[in-house]
Amino acid sequence: MGRFRAVGVGVASLSVAALSAACMSGGDKDAKVDAARAKASNMAAAASEKKAETQVAAKAKANELGQIPVIMYHRIIKNPPPGDDRTPEQFRAELERLAKEDYVPITAAEYVTGKIGIPAGKHPVVLTFDDSSPSQLTLDGMGNPKPDTAVGILMDVAKKHPGFRPVATFYVIRDLFGMSKPEEQTQVLEWLKDHGFDIGNHTHDHLNLLGKPEKEVEEQIASGQKMVTSLIKFSPVTLALPYGNQPHDKKWAMKGSSAGTSYDFRGVFLAGYTPAPSPYTKDFDPVGIPRIRSKEKVGDCVKFCSTAWLDWLNANATDRFTSDGNANTVAFPKFKAPFVAAPFAAQALPY
Ligand SMILES: [Zn+2]
Image 1 (tube, rainbow, N blue to C red):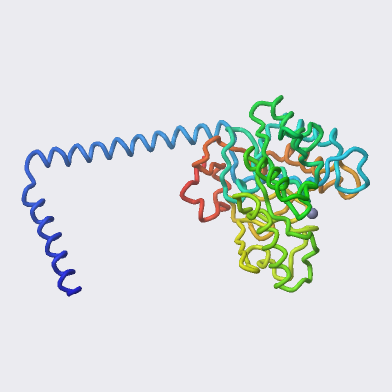
Image 2: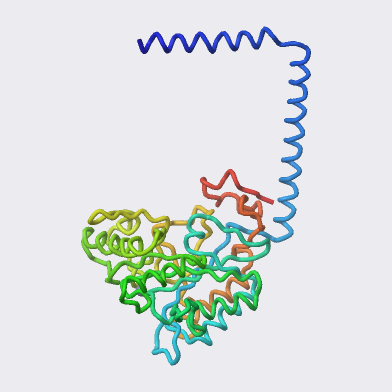
């Protein structure tokens, strides 16, 4: 029965094809000529569009294979102890510098998925905050961020610098911005989501995963994932490793499951100590993406923290990511072409 039906369909489509070939009249020929003309003019339009895109990219000195700073922040507090915390003034000054130097924030999720939609001539920067401390975000009774928190400062700087997007990624742990009730935890995560912020997984208990068995690594990451997904409709697409330490097999951090919750990240972030490669290059390795500590040039930060690296990126513009303003293309000077990653080859716009 099945075979008979298949044969029947074959005969039917054959006769339709034969009929249309036999009926080719003068009118059909004209239609064919018109179609060919339309195709040629579409191709010409595409070629001239590509030429225009190339000119825009060259004018912007676009280099979408260049490096991107992913800056790592912890607490934003007055009188911080020695370490990674920053004062509100230091944080504001760094944001002001980024705005003045034509950086536009994108989220970690946008970065790892290559969705970098910023204007021509601008440079992406990823702002990341670890450990979900109240100094990063505390909401008042009306749901407005307190002005001296990281989010309050970021929104204020963005208001003064149009085009400086107030977005960032928050790598959360079980201390959810100091909130203990699930309702309050939902309020703060929901607020972040509603305002275009990105929420990342920083594990549940912030244990050092170095040397831990696979089962425990997966349990820590999966329960961090569950914590977020059980409070709001949002699934983190990136992870930041506590202390930047990778587990024995670094792939355990990327994909796994525990107690019915699974995770499959698009990127895993470390703690140190260089700018990150463009997601469009062969150098991009989602299993271990470097970040930069926010700090002035003191101690080992003379070379390896944010002030030093922002100075370096300014001095080495051909190594820095500069956008062509077109999210559908990956534009770069022709010379850099061998570095394009295969998944983005079709979007390549060398000039
Ligand atoms: Zn941490």
